[in-house]
Image (cartoon, rainbow, N blue to C red; front, side):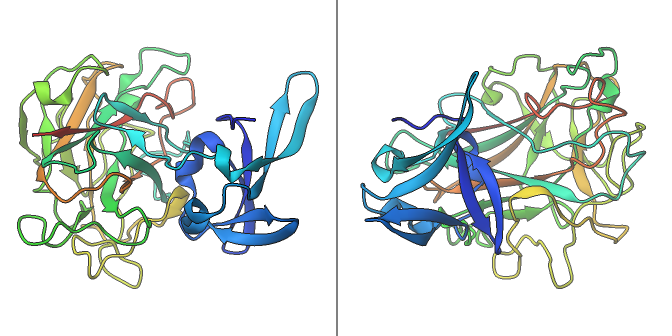
Length: 336
């Protein structure tokens, strides 16, 4: 029986049990544990070791049935695809955000969240040099009440690219990115550039527009840096995430902590200078996009994990007027 995206998998993380859908399995960390039946004996298998399990190993799956309810069954490893990579090179790939909060006031101090894309950068075994694009789409009002595009602001605090093991920053070696693919925008953002065009198509190639340095002037449809919040009400974060301290996120793979995938799980910085980048949505229509671009990237491998730290702690007055979890964040990789 083939696995379905809505099937539920039992996962253990730090001694706590939780349920994850098969369709969102990219959110399962490499150190998470799965319950596996081998020859009638139960054991725990680290998710990083699951690809090496035997084809007859069984995993417990919960599936919902219309008119019947949920049932439990066992699925073989043979029916679990050998890769969970998603193609981000053929088309713009939409990333679903975690839970968003509403009616949290202006520039909230709530925690940040982290999403992950287990990426296929190329159809070839070797990934060529290219540009990574991260797109923000203003979805404010698409929950049912239109006319409030200024509630769309989405702070982005950091980006990391990890090896497939989920624990090591991808480092291409000497050159522009010799400190690895890790960026806390409170520390620096000069490796990234912003579009400034009026972009209305979420399927159009981000390479079709020009890119410019990111500044500190909040302008509609552009990414800019701020350490003093946003100008719109009911949106924005007070600050980004820490670049110093015990748990810190830096632009150096030898000193940074790894961004953990999850919702509201990265504490906001208390420093008044640890800002973030965002697109000002006042003067921007719902449905418009802004793109970030990081050029001349090398050494990426299919299966590497892109992690994006975003603010879901204050996204409008309510779900009808505010930002949505879907059609708000995109990624794309285009080889040179």
